[in-house]
Amino acid sequence: MDIKEEEEIKKEFQLERVVLFSDAVFAIIITIMVIEIKLPEGLRHQSHEKVREAFIELLPKFAGYISAFFLVAVFWTKHLRIFSYLKDYTKQLIIFNLIFLFFISLFPFGVSLMTETISPKNFEGLFIYIGIVMLASMTQTLLIWYLIRNAKTLCIRPAEIERNLEWKAQRFNFIAIPVLLLYVAVITANHYGPNAYTVGFIIWAAVVSLVRKKFYPKQNTDGPMLARLFRSRKAKPADTE
Image 1 (cartoon, rainbow, N blue to C red):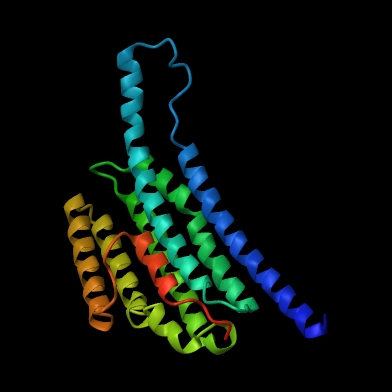
Image 2: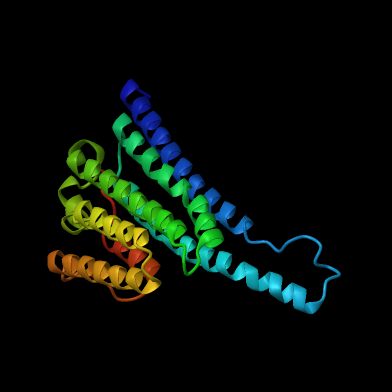
């Protein structure tokens, strides 16, 4: 085995460590969030009404966990797709990935703060949770931007990566996310009701969807998300260059 082959094996091993570390963070985050959902101690000899009341108290935490689990799953799926194109890495790529994982690691804090404080007169916890989600999305967009900018040295099939990662639509996040955060901050500061959040998110989601359809109108969107993911990978096997 010559020096070049040793370097390639070492590079592949180190890149695999980056991916495994990222996957471990996602797995730990999901585990920590579900640990927060537990009944208080001492209910074994309590009445049925007391147990039911304690269970009802857990429903906001359970709803928060469901939403956070779905969002973390979406981020993990996109992260898996991004890293499936890598053949090399740089220090800057590691830094961008760590910044992204930092905001992902804040999900348990955001969910706990939201479910413990949200009320008809208090939406600050919800604003912080939304902020964490948006910042995670922004940093993942930065990760994609760096990958595309250095595609020739870091990626397999560099000519295809911009289309495959839908960069023309993804870069809209640099505008859409700050606008959404500003909107949420304004309605939170002025103590508007939950309908204002709903309307804002519907408009935001509709605009993002229209942007994606404009640039990628023929993307295959039939079937469940995981089915589409594996179907696309089967149809476009990874090259070595």
